[in-house]
Image 1 (cartoon, helix red, strand yellow):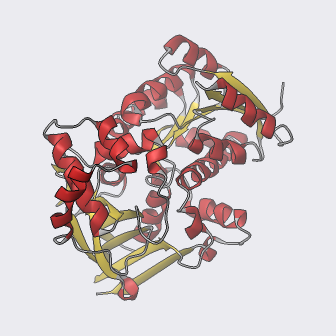
Image 2 (cartoon, rainbow, N blue to C red):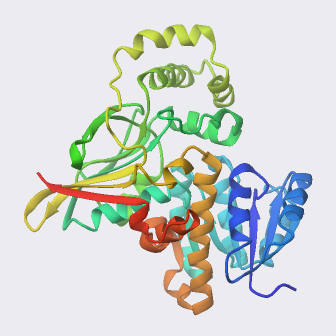
Length: 403
């Protein structure tokens, strides 16, 4: 048997899972990575590819809806990393299995509905003695850690936003090839989504425009989308004003999404069919979207990936932004959805493994969002080093100004 921690990577042969596995197999303290996926052939190819990694890599076939087999798999592991989506279909059941088997847990959940349900399992996770981290990808995940860096400069937090890019300046356009991500996206632009307003969780229609003014003279509009960050921050940071997750997006794309939103809400199209339209938009919906473009404000000079906070510091009003630096090599990572999600997951795993090794994991039991259990300086420094830099300040810029 391999020495060190055994990690099960559920969905580990997928795009995001394999990005996490490739890094996890090189991390100190990890002796074995089990690539568990319904596509056993792809899982086997990945295990062969990583045959020379420092950790042993094994392929296993798994159907996560088979509760007995899932629990048998997790029962032999120290930690499970879960990339099986969409999470509104699979997330809660997998975390429940991890709690029952006493297996520490991380995932990339970006659906707010299961995130709420999973956070409610905190007492059960504490009772099982496990640490569970919900949403340790790009957004949520890195976005939460940027938010933590921003609010650390404030004594009182009023408004808190996180934002990620959709279709500006060359970021990833492959979402249509990632079916779970595409279905998730359609789920989160339809119906109502949670935001924090006046310090309370309320449900609003998505795709509302938010005008932002950030330190350094950056300004523009971004659009509300359903994501777990606001409900997470309501628990951990408790902003007194407004909090929402936003898309930095072109007027053309948000107009088309608004057409899809309308049709989903009216029952004219289901989530899977709407997701297919991302890759092959119908002429009829494109025509309907055209006039809506004229009423949508642009993103202006907003950064691509950031968290912004407003509040009070030493009795004075202040605004803060923590963002991926424009000239950082990590900014290129945002153009790769798989890497931008899977790599932070593996770096979050590294912190859990380190705490398992030194015994401090006992101080972190329960169900957490990233900002309450993952050290942002440590994670961003580790990310910087993957790109040949030495410190988190080489890839993250934090700016503040009094208003």
